[in-house]
Image (cartoon, rainbow, N blue to C red; front, top):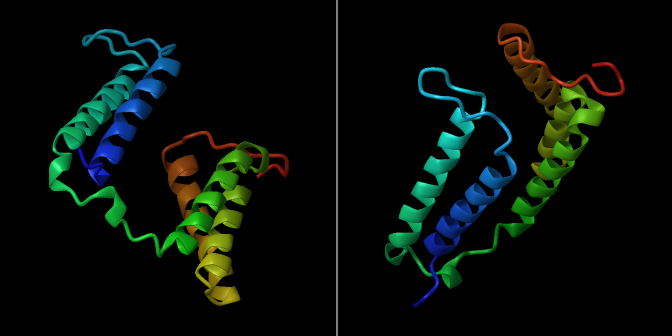
Length: 148
């Protein structure tokens, strides 16, 4: 059997879904009449695993794994690293600082855009997201050590 792209992707979704389901089963599932906090995440993880299995089964139609063009890895790797660092610093720095810094780094350093538009975009997009989630949806966002 030749390993194909969809074998890897489908297998990853099934394994990742099972792992997340195993470690997050502490939320109550509830019943259909009275759903608990864990019902939607568990249903979504189940759907993720089912669709991953379907992708794995139909992987014969996808290109071989060896045919992947890795020429864009120089661009993808910094994006992944910056996103991981921002996720790790999210609670310590707070939403506004972490997201502004992440967007600024991605736009100015990775995408090599001019300084002032990069600053304007990173601050504007973060403030807009904050307004939607914290103000309109009243979702609690971490304030961080700086208080914002």
